[in-house]
Length: 503
Ligand SMILES: *Cc1c(COP(=O)(O)O)cnc(C)c1O
Image (cartoon, rainbow, N blue to C red; front, side, top):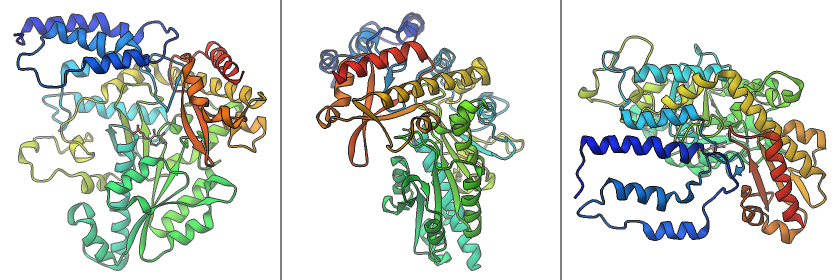
């Protein structure tokens, strides 16, 4: 029998430092994913029922390292893992994330006499705002989440609270808070029949958020302008906002997941949408999971289109962002910003818990439990803090630039290649390059090849892509999101793979 002792903790520490850096930071070789054989061996090795006597530390270590993460392949280390928008892990974030596990701090209540964790998180979120050139004084409700999906839930939850409050106020009713009294009672008091989310090509997680929050997945509506799937049809937007018996949240995609495109092409369009929202008491939410990182790019003609594309983000009421994507911290980590501090407590207050009320009620640092989903949770922002402090604005700018340039090199090459085409179609080569921000959407012209393009690319084991569909047809998506990207080297690998597959 193996019991837990100080010695076994020490051993765990030694094992950690010995293996961790091997796993996550070993020099990049060409294997991206474990083989099918490795996976089936791993599956067969899994312990399927609780052992009476534990395996002990040594056997468990071997089981984890040799069976479950066979070959130590990790998507986080491979710059050529282009599936989804996976993100890598910077060395500083990796270090911090493991400190978080060892420290095992519960970040729930701001206890300035006992812990500095809430201070660190407060500053980490401030540093993020700095990175995106967002004013700390404006984005007063800032919190960490498990990812963009959770941030979208927060955005729609705050939006729901806000639009219902506006609607009751207009009616002169008494009930003010859906968080306090429930959605149904407040809707009734406001004389509303429904809630809706108006968007263009919303990420699937917005539907999920609407489902969770009682808005309904069916009430997430795309209202695109003719000929452009991402730009709002402003006339229809206004018609929907003007409906007297329905309250609306407007959700804008900054960095649409298939194309990387932005919902607006400049601040003027965003201002118009903001004006309509203000006129009708609607909430404006931005899903900028990865697109918000466009704001990190430098002001130069090279990135003008992208910079202009994400200019409108600061006009929103709430903003979703992912840290486990382009910030390159480990899963699971996202962030949420809103300009309405008072609303946060109405939505997320953890009521009547005397044993949690020891937190400071003065000062600027809020107790996290009253402004987000979780009560107990890990010290999630330490990796964010570490990575931002370690690399700074210049470091992140360099990472995002390298990734953008690689995506553009690939896009241009695919555009010129006789066997492939880039999507959405109808762009000139110059427009394509200007619009491309870390994602390349492509298809093979030959139907048969296109049907299994992703499979064929991934079978080379040099590059991994994920499939999607565009206008009803299968398509492949190359999503670049790793700090290790080397423009020249990785472009050469992608060319070689696509050339080989097209033969
Ligand atoms: C990835 C993504 C999400 C969902 O993020 P998770 O990290 O999976 O929760 C939401 N919106 C957009 C635009 C995304 O790219």
